[in-house]
Length: 371
Image (cartoon, rainbow, N blue to C red; front, side, top):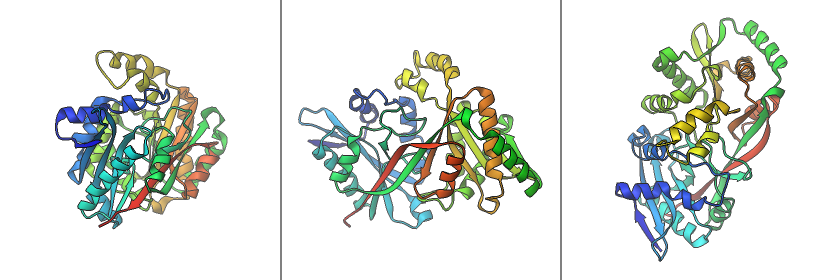
């Protein structure tokens, strides 16, 4: 076998397109847009504070059989005070030797940079797709959630990686949500927290709204496992790319006397449309998107948080109420809450209170490196 470092644009395109061969027999896999892959790996502001090396592995007939990225996020190391690097964008045929070469290649690159622990997969950071799917293989993934063959778990463990953390995804029937209970909680919250207002995103003032959301996000998630703050440039760039996908009715800010203290973002599960586009916007992908997006009946609740000093005052329930009410009015049928840490009991209980049940799990692995 032969390992190659991605150097040219043609190498990059081969790296990006490799999953199509791996997943040809997996009907639940959803190909992401090739243009989006390319942006993530090249123009993403994340790389202003991170570095990477991309590798492709070929068999003795010069066929690509796997890929991996070694990733070092210097902001993560500084914020978490943990000398950790990551592997990401892992794909492999079902062969232990292939996987071993890929993991060893990423480990050796990280170790050569002075890193002590390799963790992943992250694509490319803990603010993006993270983990291997470990249960729920019979279902399509939700928007911006990973999917992989079941054998990836076995390969990781045979190659010496250990579980670092489990992540959960909850599924709920929108029509079964506790709307009356949430309404009562909202009324109580308004009495307990004078000046509380739950409002929709003001799309006409998008730049300022995003800056408010960034402050809430970086404050509310500060103590989460593996959290790293977004830079303003990262957050604004990603938000701008998602702007046309957001629903104003399910993109909410909680404010107290005009001060943002919480946020909730639920987006339509565009993966149903992405499946039909097969990675391409042109020539027909954009037409498929415009036609099928109105048929989406599922949401993904991807962000919900309140800054620490305002928690447990009913603000969470108030945002859930507005989001659920609006989702019902828009005709959505299902909602996925993801992802939730296996030790985040408070958020798990909130998901269960909303009628959610765990239906998918994701596993993050790690291994110590030889210096």
